[in-house]
Image (cartoon, rainbow, N blue to C red):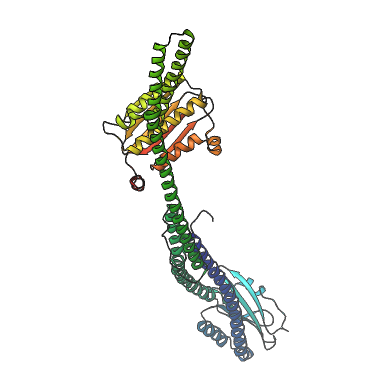
Length: 468
């Protein structure tokens, strides 16, 4: 029952109940009617037998056997259900009968009774069906006994007619029940199907769905509750979208401010700190040339070595903060230079493959990809213990797909997401800010694969935030 639809259940309940009640009524009606008809047939036989006995008394007393025979023939002609009539004297001798081909002798012993009773009825089973044999004493049995046999043919015909009428009535009732079940099914399932359709739309994120209240019943209350739920979901979705917009705007402002601060610090390091260190190098070189003391000469050399190392570190730091190649030459040149320097620093092989065409990507996307690759390489150097790293950036349809793979020790992704590693969080935030997403595949001792999917063009809201 649980595997079929509500429509089938309603049809089954209505039609099954109607058919069961109709059959029960037909059985009960037929049983009562058969009992009543049997009683009426028996009473009719008794009445006929008494009439024959009363009319035959004088004929028997005057010994008018011909008149007695005519009486029996006339009586049988008037009642079509009579199968036989015969009269016997007190000694059991048949005086008259209606059997044309001969009287059956065994019929005399089928209905024996005492003459002290007014009548006696015996049911006989014959080849033609049941026969009620009624025996009535004539003149208290002193003149004989009248026997009348009533067949059940009329009863069977009447019962057959009633059965046919009842069957037609049941069919009519079933037809009406079918129409009622159809209407009831439509009445009940239409609002339910509407609720199902609206629920599916809500599941797809459409919170504008509303269903009408069909009636003042439980389904109507369910419709009101559903509409209230969708209204609340729409309100909560609006608040969520508003919070998401604020979060995106805040994150965009933070990243923009971060990049601007990186650029400012990089310029300061390049324009001020590097120039000061260069001037210090020139001054130390002059001191070395003009100084004759060996001890001072060695100290100047050591100081020049420290200043040169500091100048290189400042240069590397400025490049990491804001690579000039990213602004001047584009993403490919900036990533290639970063990979070469990182490869030399950590002794790890880095392979980069680009398939993004000749046109440059929007600045925000290039910056995001550069920072994502930079953070991924930092994670590899800190945790992976890898020997090789592969980077693939592919422009596929309207999407930029970046794949970063290493052969390191790997990690448990679920546990890393629960712990909220800052490197992975930053990568996800940068990708989601541009309308993209990140997928991570990794397991212990089997390396890590990082998939970054970004749109090739900026989303409308992000583009507006960038211009702001």
